[in-house]
Image (tube, rainbow, N blue to C red):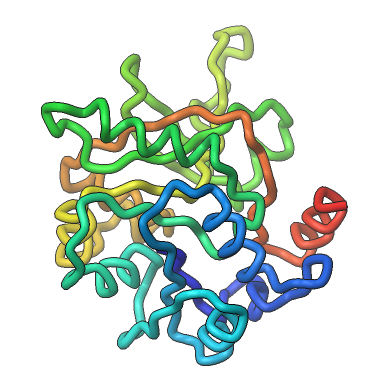
Length: 237
């Protein structure tokens, strides 16, 4: 499922921006389909413009009935009455979505025989100080088993001791859910930590869900700003 909202707060209409001859949302949809990992790939949107963009290019899309606070809510509405086990949430602004990373997420659930994992997500090791300190970059810290401890827009861990050897990881907004986990998310109210950081996966942690993080070396570009779009164009070339 690819949640796609037209009126993004930081860069309205970003999903309909041109990325070398095709829109960002169409590039993301085609990249996801091209992995050949899924029984179905569907864009879920509240926008007629985005819906028509996907359908007119031979893709699958669903209209979201309600206004939603985040992509997970939009997906939960869409899958509530579908007969599925696992749903992957690929963000609409991720045109560099790749098969290698997504297959790692799916593997988490194949290996989770005791159903200890509610959802899984991706993280990338980052080293540039500007990115570590950028509030648009969500950071994550994990335990020894790679379960998420916390997500933040602030640098975590705080580098009080520069020589500690601590690594910094950027959270990539790609999730894999058990259906019951995303429906739980949809029904549970937002709590203060999520409201403060505006990071939806914090809601899972606040309610005691377990998030398995999977490291990937695929950086790509998430298009949140006009500057990101220019970086994406350079990378695409």
